[in-house]
Image (cartoon, rainbow, N blue to C red):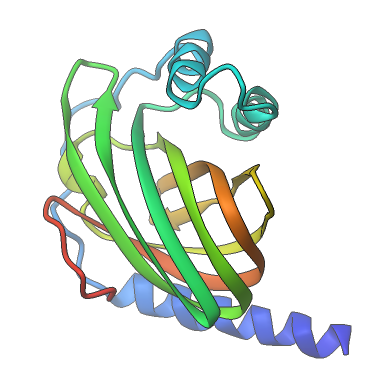
Length: 195
């Protein structure tokens, strides 16, 4: 049974990743030098201020992401909501901040498919890696997520498109558990169409 489940998830990842890689890029990458990353203590301070001091586990999760990827070139502070009964949907909005002082509004949405049930609302702090401009965010980022929210909890997963990596850290309420494969589609405007 476990082998069937692992094969199912691997197949879904391959399909989603293949579809995401065939999607047109939102904009050509700039030839400017890579953005200077934020300092880790700056990002931790921003996250603590955003989530509040009562969000236990946020610093531990962020430190784990820093260990895996180092400091980000940008981050998003926002909120999102979603739900699933096998097939799921997620919608969110926030403001992206680059280390050079550039900022802008961003909206995201996306479907998921898997063994995933429930609903959640979350404050979301997204660390962004290998990015030079806001336009590079406006595309689809594939990913696999395992989530377990009860009354409250912190979670992180990774979404990737090319070299750009998103690491959404979510501090949520509700009840949602399971494993799913899907993508996040980021755009400069709100849309209720999840694809």
